[in-house]
Length: 444
Ligand SMILES: NC(=O)c1ccc[n+]([C@@H]2O[C@H](COP(=O)([O-])OP(=O)(O)OC[C@H]3O[C@@H](n4cnc5c(N)ncnc54)[C@H](O)[C@@H]3O)[C@@H](O)[C@H]2O)c1
Ligand SMILES: O=c1ccn([C@@H]2O[C@H](COP(=O)(O)OP(=O)(O)O[C@H]3O[C@H](CO)[C@@H](O)[C@H](O)[C@H]3O)[C@@H](O)[C@H]2O)c(=O)[nH]1
Image (cartoon, rainbow, N blue to C red; front, side, top):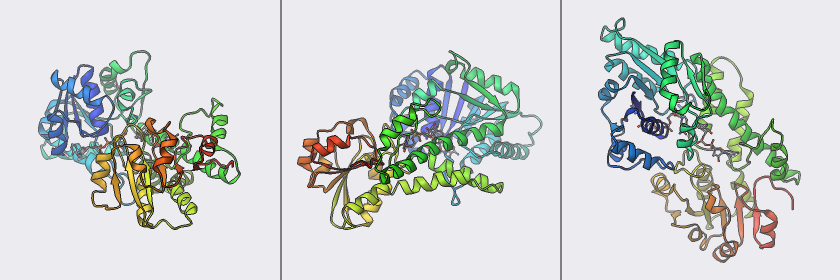
């Protein structure tokens, strides 16, 4: 089948590549010439495990192409995916300018029946706005009565770092349509990913749009709930890690997404919780739980900073901190809304400097902070420690889980660790003579 994907970011590239992998003829369109040039030169603009090889193979076999030519893109596919960004606007609501711009391009250039599939995360009612934008362009061409199209909401649930697997083996394929014929077309497109049992859940468009926000808000709520409890556990001299294990054993609660830490980041949870909250406001509903989820996360991103300030009694000027982990989570180079950024920016403000290491996000850190004289990016974890006054662990990359603590002690000025992901055993730290601060582990 012929497929066009607008947007070659995390979602668009993964969607396009996986659809090509199962035999479709896919054309990826992006307005960012740099990205398209990189892709045409065999380089991936993002780090996502397994993606480079898949792109290379499908490109070589002629099923996957990249272009900046929008008209060519619209001319190519029966299926036109919209996978462009929906960043937060100034008031936190989703900025739909990129989505609507693609819709107008489709209306401007389409010349046959088209299925427009919205994969971007968009507020309830966006499909109607996409339809109107396409219709306005068709009207200009006097084609409204002769050219048909359908708009489908098909939100994406992939996680960065596990995106290929999430796409290839989806837990659910949500399809929001107002036309049963389209559901069947989408069912056929997704059939290679839907073989063992039917995972396609068809519903009306508005419910599909809301399902995406509802899922992210629920996951973010679990995390903020655990972070709230962690802060409480600390003050009650209890250990949140013991509490987590005890709670998770109840299958109604489960072990997923109840890891306390230094706050959730990434391109989705912060913006989607905010956007849902703004949607609620628009319909005069005060979404108190969502407000709290966001507020708790904002505070949680400060928790490491507070612990550091308390330990050093506010005297951070001239100190150096080793930071392990810059990406918002392991297995990605993405630093959008990463807790590492809140931490480093607070340390710099207090007059301290940072020596940082991340297995994948060094290029992104260089791009974001090229002007900072108080940031040194180093090539390996141990080099970050040399001459530093403390180690701060921010991202739970596997290689940070079992470090050589003797080497850590040899390299640091003082044996001191602030652990934002509860990777280490407090008792082991005590035996090793390392002062250790974690999240929600109050027991002395
Ligand atoms: N990143 C994720 O893990 C994830 C997962 C599920 C859903 N989402 C949602 O999917 C959407 C895309 O997210 P992303 O992380 O892939 O974004 P991204 O910023 O990585 O990529 C978006 C791409 O769209 C391109 N673009 C903008 N306008 C365009 C146009 N008119 N035509 C063609 N290309 C255009 C940009 O140049 C950019 O390359 C967002 O709504 C996001 O909330 C993201
Ligand atoms: O128990 C947990 C689990 C996650 N996190 C943090 O939460 C953030 C988000 O993690 P994750 O959900 O794994 O990453 P994303 O790639 O942002 O994926 C989320 O956002 C995507 C975009 O909408 C959705 O498609 C996915 O289903 C949803 O998991 C990260 O900062 C994690 O460190 C915690 O603090 N504790």
